[in-house]
Image (cartoon, one colour):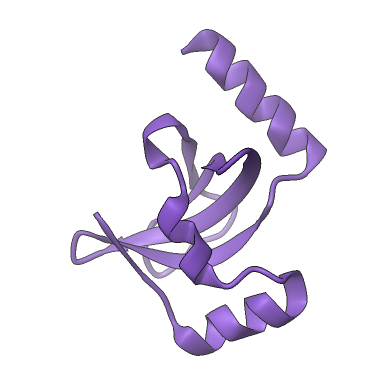
Length: 92
């Protein structure tokens, strides 16, 4: 699947987190832990993926649009998310 995102939101993410959405092209979806975000009632299903970009764990929040991953958020994984990923990898 291809990635798509809002350029303005990507620039804002780059300013706030030094992470433009374009780096997500290297996100390893094949080995990622992915779960649906059901905390709120969104207009479309949202998913949270914890996975690697190079040798660092990141979190991508995305939705599926026209068979593409539409990036909503990208950030470094926090310690709780790192632990969740480690447990997932031990099980699978």
